[in-house]
Length: 279
Ligand SMILES: [Zn+2]
Image (cartoon, rainbow, N blue to C red):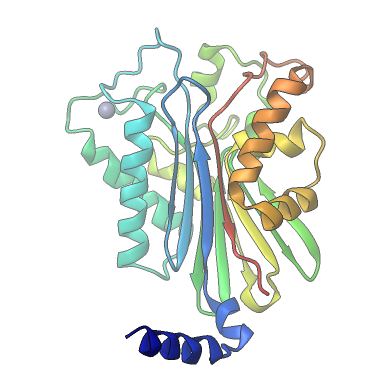
């Protein structure tokens, strides 16, 4: 018996898969971790053809949102509706996919919530989707898609939350999903049309990742380059990026500042999905 197994194993080992077959698969690896002592308001879903990273916006405990649901509920419902939309119409433009998903989530509130409330639970969105020889991306609010092709590293980052006139809760509520403010996935499908979208030729793509701002603080605050983040993840896996964030948060909290803005939280939920690089 063992001899037969060994013989089979030798035969399998002897099969040399051409490298391009491995490289043609959209294999994603991911890691996600809440800030210490909190529920994870990030959410990540990966499949053979797409990856989705969501970051539910944290609500102050005393905020009246008009909704019985919380950000954890929202990211799970939105994730589920995005998977359905991506599956039913796998080649639809991603902004239409997101609009359909937001509209579907409205129904899942169950008629109990005020969907016009500007503090209704909300989420950032990052999506990457394979479509033939193209890879499409979508970014809404402050999650990121970062990729490297023949032209170098490109960071898709929606910076409209970085230039608000103030960051008190009334100003943020007033400017949410407004042309003079910023856009986020909540109860208004029109927000989807404001997402950053584009495509990159698959055969030019070298490296790609999606992440929440809990990971991009490596470059925003902790002075790593995206090239260094890619190298770290290639060397040690996506969990290493989360671990690096936690180490910097403890070792260099003084770097967590944005001039003119409220203090940046010491820890944040951190999520990264990365496309396996070609051999
Ligand atoms: Zn609700």
